[in-house]
Image (tube, rainbow over the protein chains, first blue to last red):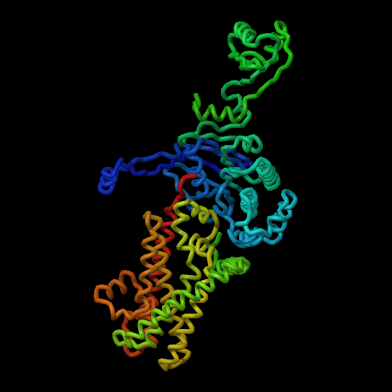
Length: 333
Length: 267
């Protein structure tokens, strides 16, 4: 498969005015301006293939939007190379725009006063979509979501969920090669979130559209992305499959058991027995954080079964959310 | 991909306009109230003009009907800016909130896309009122009417419109660089009220400013001289169509340059 996006060592720097404090400082700023260079994106490289769904993650202010703006051709990188669909996006902004779709979670790009179907028709003209392609797309939409009630409703009367849904449909309408979704599920209720995830997934499958998704909702990531890229402070921290992510800090699983008698005392004993793992107890459960690189959970369980009468047990996987949190907080070692 | 043709933009604009009008009509109360408001605005403007002339029979050699002609001319020539470029007033807010970024993602001209979003129907009433005034004063002045005259009228009305559009574009585009651009836009809009007076009434300093710095004298005065006083048309009147085109082009370039410089405010 071919790469639809190729990014090689891109860096983006902004010149920011160093503001001095207080009134006196502001007066000084008027006369002598002291700029500092802020590196929003720092030497990032990645290749994205046609048809991938990539979760682009990072804490607020990590440089996600800046990267996306460079991919959409709004910003010119300070250095490095970027190719989207074989073109340099900032040199060919309109040509690039023909092949991409963009959705910003809370900002609609539809015509505020117009019913959705009229917005679609205008977009059809703008992108030069043929009647047949347009009708096929609408048919596909109808098979995926219930759009009938939306089609004749002015955008301004829509709920946030309906609007986001409409924006996503509008972004896919001209069958772009790449769709950028910036926090598409922000502020939505659970059922709408799942509806939107299903829709994105289906459109990706059906049209082989590349999707670049930025989000803070790990539900989105788990439901949609096979590959994730994490950046922070402009630097790339992680770029790999989501399965590898879970093993990033070792394959940890939490084994929880319930036994008779005093839990605290039992926990003490287990701690002595299994010095390599951390053991804790609350009112109901004894939790043992097992590093699977050292021994398998099942072995630990059978070992414990010999000494204690286990009434109940639970096995908890470490969640994507926890791993990401750990990466944001600790970085990569 | 080849450049989109003028016909393409015209088609798109027509579609957006038709839909926009349809949706505006469906908000009936809103439509009626703004129509009434517009009628009153025009009447009030006219009344103040009329009171002025009850007290001064002429201003610097300009009689009542000549002044009325100038007044009508400025109303008509200010219509396009009101109807088609009203979104310029919203530019500032969109730039600060970051909503402006959406205009960067479509494969069409950004300036067109932005301006096409709003059609202000209020301008139409102004147009009707201005046209009525113009025809009325034309009759009263006993000006000749010939196809050539009509052609001149149309050319110079377009000239005047372009100047005002250019002024507004340039004023609105300042928001890409400065924080309080509202005052610039407001100032330019206030100045346009002076457009309906003959420039000869101002002191030489202001005459210079209104001709070369903020060229509002081109909105009504210089162009209407061609029709009103064909014997004393200054050279500035004849070159005003070219001035208008150049000025419009420059304002468009300034606007686009600002838009290109713009890169959203964070996420």
